[in-house]
Length: 278
Length: 288
Image (tube, rainbow over the protein chains, first blue to last red):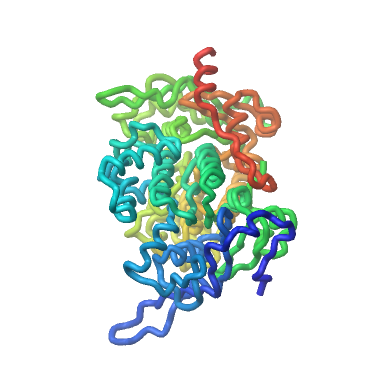
């Protein structure tokens, strides 16, 4: 087992910020389909006892290959998949035990942005509706005109022109759609964004714009990120701390620069070696 | 060194392609010229919409027309102009002498046929000489590093991982013994570790079979150590071309400089990444 409690040697200001998310010995298990009239005892376990914490304003990078369990961890954190065992705490509250309406305050604080901006926006809705929808749920007191104003502000915040409001997703490029996804996530004023491969489907030139935008937003709004990607170069660039995931387990956890300068785990070294270098 | 007097494997001269719709005409490719010697590797680098894929597809006339319309230019392959060739004769080149590997292997493979069936189909058209297609197919799957080629031959695409599917696509290209392999963003849909493996595989088959590779990519990070020459496209035009090492060491065009600078580098944690200033580029391009 790797050292599971990494501690930054330097007294980073982030160390004094409150812990937002605490994941403890998380296990996610899916049953495999069994035969007719037979209860299946077989299962797959994409996440096998993972622990980490994220402080306010901090970026934790989660890096691993397809099948490493990184997306499942992200989904468990936003409660899209149920944990088999372990605990997920948000500001000290066990959110893995909540359900239904009691989850709503948590969903307001933790939002997610997805990899594929083509499939994560409803093609039949205008941008005003897409960005305004979370407001309907979490700020029911807002009137329609106020929601629209708020949506316009959010679009400006992520660098989209004001006339985007009444347009549809297909009228935008991949990078712009990712900006719309970010605006939608920001609508409810969250504290933590779970970003699942948000730049992997984009050109490197567009990737750079989105990475810069995420950094700006963090600085201005004090957001925390759980940044999930297979690309260690991007993860290292954005993160304070990096968790390397392999076959459902964290094999190395270290501050970003240390991980790059002095990778301890063999798998981490392999990941670093596969990054094309200029 | 290739003989400079030899006929180039591929010579594209003054190629211009428009996309014509009722509302407007888009000049997707605008006066593009380049050539490739046999056995060489050329990378075409550019962003979405730069015309790099359209250029690549036009070589074997794979663009649907309409909307695509070749306005001008010639594509000579071993001295034959492919753009004026009758369709029947072109078949010999398309997928035969010029093979393609695309970005998304899961959509390039037909989900309802086995790998073996799809490989046999490719051979039936381009390698009628082969007595035993199964043996040749299994040999090709072995060549692309598939460990259990017998099992892979019987598999359906959904049973394979993305990296394996891309290996199958490369095997399908290889089995026709092409002279030129056009790889259009072959690793963009794959993890970085698998990307490294696929690029290594392409390097190996290039040296083993002496084929040329035309790599289309948006990522300058992939070019170093892979391509001998690089060509940078922006808004349908070539803005810079030259030997890869020279272009990477001292890129002359501001677009090339920006495209190289926006690749994230390890050990530069938390710095802002360079982005491309399109307004400045447009001003520059309109001057020239």
